[in-house]
Image 1 (cartoon, rainbow, N blue to C red):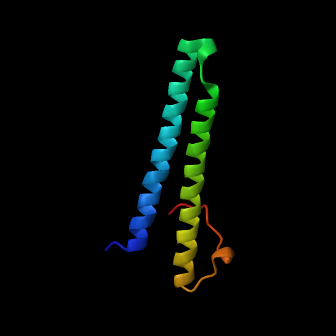
Image 2: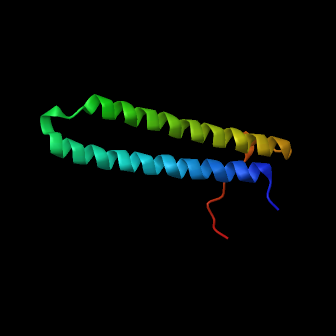
Length: 89
């Protein structure tokens, strides 16, 4: 059985991975075009695009944290008091 919260978490994870991939692809395009154009390369435009992607990644992280806090609060737990375990099951 899936929950709305679980679907939201999965969607945020997919979006995060897509943004990270977009960032890598932008860097690959930047390297290729920088090499091809040399002195005519529009570095400021690529820096701005990287900043936009970074802002989107920040947004996804904030939403993931907000959703997690909401889930914990709904479950009767205090979000700031939960410790994450690094053990694998």
